[in-house]
Image (cartoon, rainbow, N blue to C red):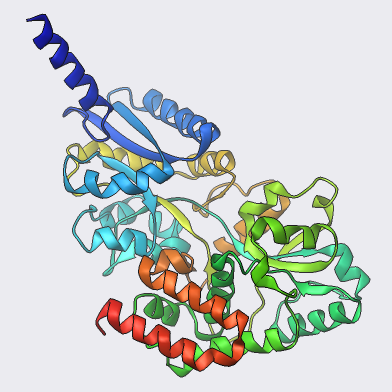
Length: 412
């Protein structure tokens, strides 16, 4: 009898520990987190929710981000929690198209999310319906050294492509490499591809390409690479960029050997104190003013699984989490930006600029190359970018190779 009781208790404890096993009447929420600091921030907000809604029995499972990615498909297809954290774009659409995420379109209409989250609505949508409640995101743009710009005689931040090219010319004349890039980390090259494509062809085209609907031999794709090749030929980037990862390339900026770097605002926290006052940040320059300006702004989000048991309280929970105040609190704690355009602006200077860029974007928010695309195609695409940087003359054969890969993966 004692053995049976112990076994039953052990089984109950194990079940309670598993994500998504809360009994009916409770609200089970699964959260991916990195580090103790992030967990503390989430917990503070959950404690506030409990005070505001004492009638809801909130049960939270915190799961390390890498383990979370592996476990999420199992939760969504078996015993599901009521709310999960995840990502927008292709990462969201993958589950939405399989019927594993709840349609949140009514929540968007009812809670004024269409206004507060206008810039992230496209990334939250699949087939014209919304399946995500955005929480935080971060901006991508050009970091630069103000003192080096001054030294080279550059009057202000380049807003157009001719101004950017002129700034690069002046920096080279002053003996300064215009742009640092960490080509050993292929995803940093993907940032360059994203921005050149967004500025030349626009977000609608970019998303079709990410979805495998456009051949890589399309002239519009080639134009992105030929524009990139012009920068390489003009020695805009540091030498041997494929030798450096992100950690190794940042000293080029810190030591004044390079003036600019295209990167997400998440790196700003690691700038040395003596360099921080000299670091500025501006929007990637406009190449074609007829193309609506879009940005990379990877969005974190919350979702209600289709198999959730307590959907009524899940909708109440999302309505609470999507308020401007909670958005600002979460963003500050996570070192990100609130996806809610009505949240108070961040106080940190670079975060403030990033917030303004993303909040005012009219051409849409892309999720970043490897979040907008299936993993296999993204991996091959970034490998192709490294091959291109290594030898730009092989552009046509690289694009032909990527097109063969696209046809194999997407059967198109």
